[in-house]
Amino acid sequence: MRPVFVGNHPAIDFLNTALAPNGKPIETMGDGKAWLEWLVAAGLLDRRAATKLARRSGAGALDESAAEARRVREWARDWLIRWRANPKGDRREEVAALNKLLARGTYGRQVMITGSELQVAELPRVETAGMLIALVAAQFAELVTKEQPALVKDCASSACTLWFLDQSKAHSRLFCSPSACGNRAKVAAFRERQRG
Image (cartoon, rainbow, N blue to C red):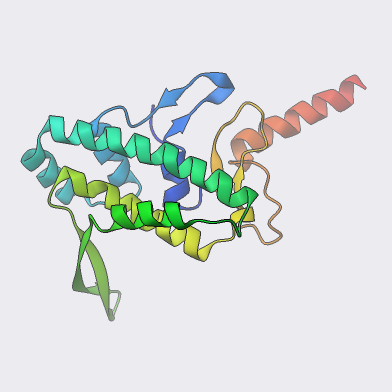
């Protein structure tokens, strides 16, 4: 299955790489190749860098990196659940673990041309498969330092396990996708009204 990008944030989309529609678990990062493909699709790694890394690292190292990513994903999911429940709680242990993941990344500055403007960008340098997790760690660091915990939500559909960052004006979004789960909920409510 192809990964879904409905989270409005790469860290949330990373959580959504494990889903269970209607209770049937689906893993979209089952191996190193799928992990690399997800990073490229999420815009965290460019295709050329992914191809170079795949050649340099080999399938075994990439599979090991994917296994670590799955462990980090579950750790991050647990942390976000606790963060939403108690935004002011003690987070020292999680922050220390996140900082260890961030320390595995290296970044270099590069001047980029955007339209007619020049700007300096911090671009990741990924030289080993073990450094890939730092790309996601940077996204989690952004999420927990810049967003409100109450805006990290689960889809309201009982058949869906996807998460999203509610960026709606009134912060009243209920579903991961208005056209998928939201539409199904409207149809179900309409049918229920018709029966009543």
